[in-house]
Amino acid sequence: MAELATVARPYARALFEAADPATARSLVAVLQRLALIASEPRLREFADDPRVSAREVGELIQGVLGEPLPPLLQGLLDAVLENHRLAAMGEIAEQFRALVDAREGVSKATIYSAFELSAEQLADLLPALERRFGRRLQAEVVVEPELIGGVRVVVGDEVLDTSVRARLEQMRTGLAA
Image (cartoon, rainbow, N blue to C red; front, side, top):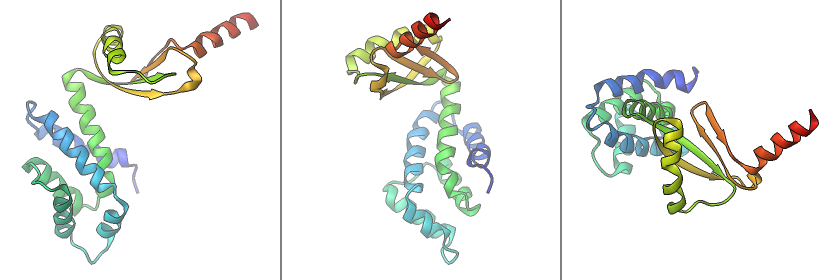
C-alpha cells in the first residue's frame, strides 16, 4: 500500500480548497475527533470486513461521534470509506491542520523542557519564541529530563537549543579542539 502521507494528501488538499477559510479552524477539531475514532483497531477490523458496506461503517462512526458531521466532512468520510482509505484518516487530519495553520501563519512548536512548565511560564516564553521564529506558534511541551535545564524548541526544521546539555556539549567540543 502507498505511504499514508501520499494517500492522504489529495483528500486533505481537496478539503482545504473546499473549506470556507472562516470555518476551516472549526473543521480541524472535528476532523481530529474523526481521526481518533478511525484509529480504533476494532472499527478498522469491522471496516475491513468485505461483508460490511461503507454506509454501515459510516453509520457506526456517526453513532460513535454522537453528532452529525458538517456536510463537507460527511462528504470526505463517504469518499474515504468508498475508497477503503480509513487508515489514512489520521494523516488526512494532520495534513489538513498543517494547511490551515500555514494559511493562518501559525506553526507547530515542540518545546522540550527539563522540567514541567506551568501555564504562566509558557505564557511568558511563547511571545519571545514567536518573535524569534517570526510567526505565531502553537506550542506543545514535552518533558525531557536529560536536558538538565533550559529548553530546546523545534519549529518545523528550525531548532533553538538553549538547554544545559547543549551548552555542556559545546564546551566539550571546544575543549577537545
